[in-house]
Length: 322
Ligand SMILES: *Cc1c(COP(=O)(O)O)cnc(C)c1O
Image (cartoon, rainbow, N blue to C red; front, side, top):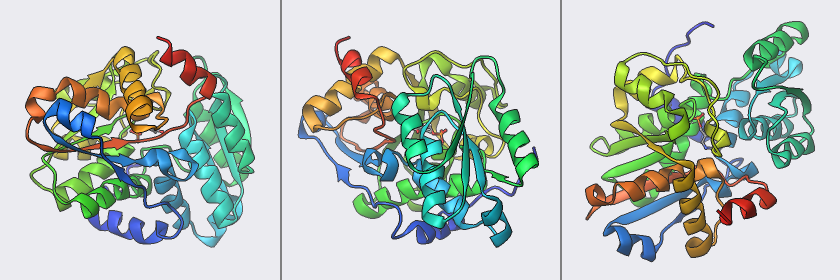
């Protein structure tokens, strides 16, 4: 795969202009219970209230908005465990182009149904035995579609960066910011916005403990590949960071932290009980990590990105019984 020029904060600003009027400007919520518990002031950027239920709409819409007329005609192909699929499918429909989505057979039923509901053609594969990137590339070549990967693309990264840009616009500077980490589209975009708007802010990426390839990569200085991790955080089951996301993460992020599935369930329960919000397991990574950092966060202004809220309700209820 060829390497494209890395995005800068100017690309995040351009993305903000492209998505204006299409993406929701999501709310920032707070919890006095949590503030009291941490002795800190915490601001949640609620992308669970984004269109299609996750921040992925931002990057997808930004990328598709930049297609040439010829690319629009051929349409877009994407491979995704779920939210990127929905982001691409919805963006394609809004922009009037065809979309084909390659999805794993074990993706949440809700996500597959929603993707089809947006009018996309869905191709199913087995995530433990087949290579989704090869399938996607094959479809692109055969049918003249343009492949938009879920994270490793400058336009996707720049679009995701608009989340943190809005947060800083709304609450001003912060001492620390936590964002979920899968392949690093969200975290690298967040890093661009953070270094431009709150240069002193500590920035933490948070990934599932069972799949800490990002932490290993960050600390070793080169991209570490792992097997598909078994975790309830299905939005962060990536096997490696991207060649575009990694350099920005390495340059601009403070550290990568992890959370166990049990900690994610605790955080989801907090969101449901205390804040009346349904947050998907991956979306709870930021809070799960912040709760472990209570001592370090005392007296600080802290941002936490809730990245999404797409979870099967039956599965959500099962998790809440744990
Ligand atoms: C995709 C996704 C992530 C991870 O984003 P990356 O850009 O791959 O790091 C986190 N949370 C949710 C809800 C997602 O859909």
